[in-house]
Image (cartoon, rainbow, N blue to C red):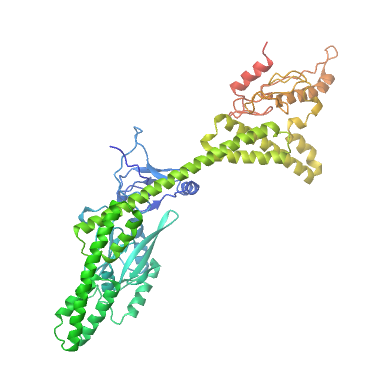
Amino acid sequence: MRGDKRQIQTAVLGSADSEEPLMLPLEAIELDAFRQQHEHDTFWCGLLLGGCGVRLTTKLYTDRVCHFAHIPGLDGLSHHCGRSARGVASADHLYVKSAARSWLRSLEEEADFDFARPDGVAIGSVVDIRLKTRGLRVHLDQAVAPVWEEDGVEPVLGVSVPVDRDTLIRRWYVHRVRLDSEGTARRVRIGTEAFARPTEWFALDECEMTERGLSTPAVEQIVRSRSVRPASPWGAGRTVKTPPAHVRAQTLLRQLAEARRVGSVVVVTRVCRDMAALTEVEGELQDQLSGAVAAADRWLEEQAQTRQELFHDLAQAIAWQEVGQVCPLLVRANAIASHDRTEAEMAIADDAAECLDTHARQRQAEVAAVRAAQAEERARDEADRVKKLLDTLESRGIGQPRQAMREMVKDLICAAAGAGAYVDAQQRKQVELWRRRADGAGALAQIARQKRASPPARAARLKRASLLHEQVGRRSWFKEPCPRCDAAKGRHCFNDDDSGGRDRRPLPHEERLQLIISTRNARPEQTTQRPPSQPQSASPVWRVKDVTCPECDAAPGSNCTTPDGRPHQRRETHFRRRFHSP
């Protein structure tokens, strides 16, 4: 069985049955800080996330989003997990529970929480919050249809859960829930949606529980704007005095006009039924009711025809794959024909949604392909830039001013980083060599600045940090043969360090300069300390550390990077071949 390849963006902390969720940052630069923050924590594919309960690790990528991954078993094979929800919203039910518990505690309210699974739906679709005398049912997706007439339980809808305008008109308002990503957490916000009013969003601490149920500042404004308060879903039924027949008739006429104006078929049908049942009126008012019902019947026939044409056009747009037509037609169908759909109409609407989803996925794939091609083109351009910079540095890099050389090397390092895999191992080695040279030039520039700032100490500092080629006069550079490249006396050194083939070097090798310095330093000592019977000799005694290490690139006179500072075997072999070969 093949494993699910979708990326896991959420996990729980501490154990498989934990209720403490967290979300992984998508960018590599944020994941480094995330790892430091949670270096002592463990991440799990939580059971309350519908996961398998296996421990997770973090995966860092620079060319795609970062994500969690299952830790492989002892056999090294990838783990199969049947978890269905893996995106950033897959732990929203845990965030809702945590936020609601904290909010209710601040209101001194006790509540029980349950991740209900009616009809076996996936965990996380519904969160039940039960208080002493009332409760809330939070619908995070469309898997469970909200029940509006259930006593003591108020539905709170996720942003993707639809609600028809008839419900909005009848109930005055409905509540919604939204979760916004903030760092590695999700922030809960409550919205109030009313008919012909935009949804207004509030933080949880701006909401309260009243006798009507969940209330927001927007609810208070809606209630004040109405002349008649809506029936409370929480309390017991109250006896309401029935208004006179002529008052009810006038009210029904106004409701019918309003319903036709907004295009509500359900309300028009219900009001016409109520008008037909109103038998206590007579005369002119009865004639108005009869005329209004007749006009409404004709309007309903027109709406039925319009609805039939709408779904016909939608089906035709799906068949011809006209996505530009499918989207507005589906929006219109959801707005004016969301009630009492036939099986054929539901099938057409489902096909339209699938068509839009397929188009969105194709569009995303196309955008990803374009971005990948652009990234590859940028990498190739940077690789060409690396080659040009290396050629320029090899031709005139050392001989030019230090600052110019360092700026060019800085550009080289940036270009190599952007080129990625298009820079081969040979070029990377050259880039690293020029980086070390630039670091040396920078150190020398710092010595020069210190020399100007502190004249008494400049001689000692310059002697400690100066490069070898500045300790030997130019006319003396080639007085001795080079022990590294075997260049003869009086001849220039040539490249043998993979930085430019066998081209002539503008400066001699460090070993050649060290030989000249050692010879120069050895002459006075041997002249003053040699016995009179021994002839004077200026030949220095060479040590292994006087040659560059081919293993770790340790400079002449420096120890190798081994734990005890002893030279590498390749350095000893290089030394014997240079100075002890017959």
